[in-house]
Image 1 (tube, one colour):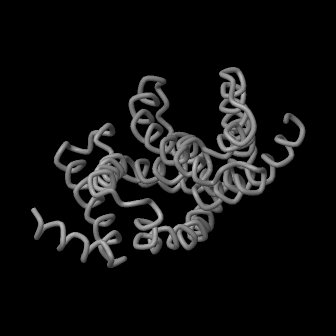
Image 2 (cartoon, rainbow, N blue to C red):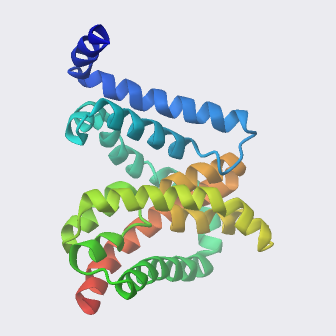
Image 3 (cartoon, rainbow, N blue to C red):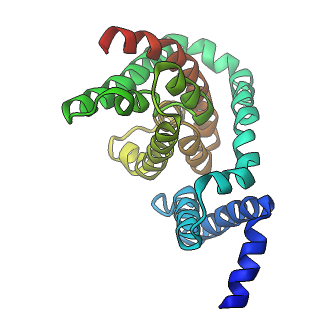
Amino acid sequence: MTDFAEIWSYLAADPLLWLTLTLGAYVIGDAAFRASGRKPWVNPVLIAVTLLAAALLLSGTPYPVYFEGAKFVHFMLGPATVALAAPLHANLPNIRRAVLPMGCALLAGSLTAVLSVTGIGWALGLRGELLLSLAPRSTTAPVALGISEAIGGSPTLTAVMVIVTGIIGAIVVTPLLNALGLRDWRARGFAIGIAAHGIGTARAFQVNETAGAFAGIGMGLNALLTALLVPGLVALLF
């Protein structure tokens, strides 16, 4: 055990260790997801988060040390967000034909996401920084963190809520929309993109390519609209 502790101390000092473990945890989660027959509740992100949390807890590693190694993954969130322009451009003809219903759905989805979570939080006694941190939780992570910081929330707490929202959305979306009898892949994808950002979009691509493309569109447009709406809503309400 002494030898293992010495080896671990040596490895833990190398930032690449945590990047490797992060990627490895996701590979394990994805393998479990595929082995389950792509069951929505066997979510690769949830599995990866659980494995990494256990590793940090058991090793006694502070989060800043972990982030120093895994920040390359965080950096890639920026280019990934910019890449949302690709499905928008590829589906411009479809968007033009459905611009009115998509606009109405986008506005309704964005407002519902912000007002419902802040309203429930307020009713349960949350105030100040905690409440403000919840407002952008349905937006993709890079945008949500920027919004949270701008309105006086905690970006760290917002990041947690963004991940939780995405995982829950990815798990429940397929059985929920099946139960509602919604068969239009465009509508299904757009809804999950607005409600559950990147993790939900990844799930939509696993189910249907058209749903995935429209989920990307919904995620990108919701990020833009939420960034415009939330500061004003927060100033008005709080």
